[in-house]
Length: 634
Ligand code: ADP
Ligand code: MG
Ligand code: MG
Ligand code: MG
Ligand code: MG
Image (tube, rainbow, N blue to C red; front, side):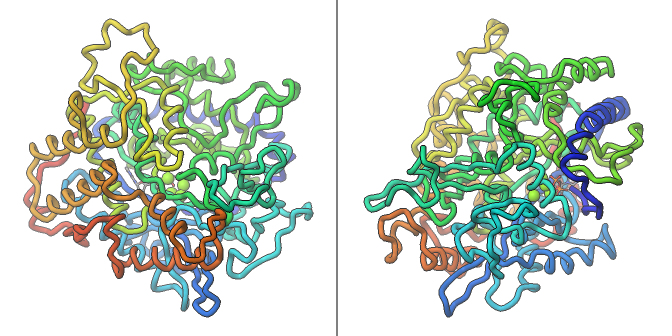
């Protein structure tokens, strides 16, 4: 998302009445865009990360930590350099859903030199410092996935009363006041209100509590049928979480399809490995990840669409929220693994096909377009479908899925891209850089060695659910492809979408290998062995890989397990699943010291965490023409 332009949102009634208009023109815009850009070739590898941060305010006298609602104030300053000199800045800043969140990316995407891996961590440090300079006494910028006491009384600073009965309130939440939604742009409140109105009731998020000796049931506010669940009722409980995302540019549309597909089975694996969010609304829960929470937090499906009432007004029963894992592969290799029936309007599919779009892409786009627009601005209603793509982007950008297939923006030098969206945030820049470097390297390995990780989409869905369970990284087994080496074995199974090709493996086996599989780390090292790389970059990469290796092997804790342990071992914890103000405060204080490197945390990060990260690629290396990481297909 670029700098948000100001605008006036339409009412839900108006928006609803224009749903078909947005669909029709969005699809037309995609067809035009595809005709213009389908043959675009020769883009080079570029990539970049997005890190979301929370502003946390510590009150040392009261021993409490709150989410500080100063993102707007801080962003105004953070964005000044970009407004003056958009091409000359080292970082870019964007608003996010909550009034306590900001999103930072590198000023420019990274490129194809291995040495770029050595500037990621520095860029992350730089971003953190930039925010830090703008903070008031007691405030800290933190890369945490979920704020443990979000939605508890006085969780924010300043604190506001909730207004569940106020018809003017966007969320009407029992816990999350509208003031905690970012107010610098109307989009966020508007989405909140429209998702609630489309659904016909407030969203419903229900997370199983971690059952401890003294846990009291029913959990306060729980639904009658699930007294052992933590109930939440607002978009902010999901979209108010932070995450780590990555975008890659492919050399052409086909390579983008391959990357999109091949990274898909890795989404649940990376979700489990980066798990970092076991605490919600002041409770220790039985899940380790945010995914299902966000999914439910923006679930705009009506009762009919959820299958609770017979279809009358709506056309479909839809089995997923618009925030969920992807439903179909886009490459030819992927086609036979599309084993989940795809829902779409036949009309839309036909229009796309007649517009020159192949079956796989047409069904993907038609499937995205089963969703109605939930946010429309008056000045965007009428567009030039030849040149603009706002209606397409309207639907595309509110299908929040594990992967996103991003077409080139109108009149830009940017190529076809894919975005990897499942990862949770780690406390330190070192860890986040490690994840980023690991995934980018994986994309190079997949393309260079022509690896194939595809498994049926239904199995990826199963893995997504497993990934979120408590301690999944250590204890769960995931469907993974047995024969990763190209397509050899597939010839005789072309009709077969049952999973003969996959087996249940642990994260340790996937990352570190087993008899039949070298493991992702070894594959990366094989790839690196064929490349020349400067010593510092080599050293940093090896430290990053070591972290991933040891997390996967269970020698280091996941962030979620560490958080869990901190709560369970806290002297104030009463074995009642409750994360008190004091526990919240101490946990976040400790996390802050770890993120700043002031407190070593061997059980979480290990002891070798001094990478050789650099602010810039040394000119000597840039000049030496280090070999560029090649794209896979030409
Ligand atoms: P969104 O929020 O829509 O996912 P952002 O613009 O916030 O997109 O961030 C996308 C990421 O893509 C950033 O890390 C940015 O550096 C990176 N990026 C920008 N241009 C390119 C490009 N041409 N190819 C790949 N990545 C890019
Ligand atoms: Mg972004
Ligand atoms: Mg975004
Ligand atoms: Mg974001
Ligand atoms: Mg993104």
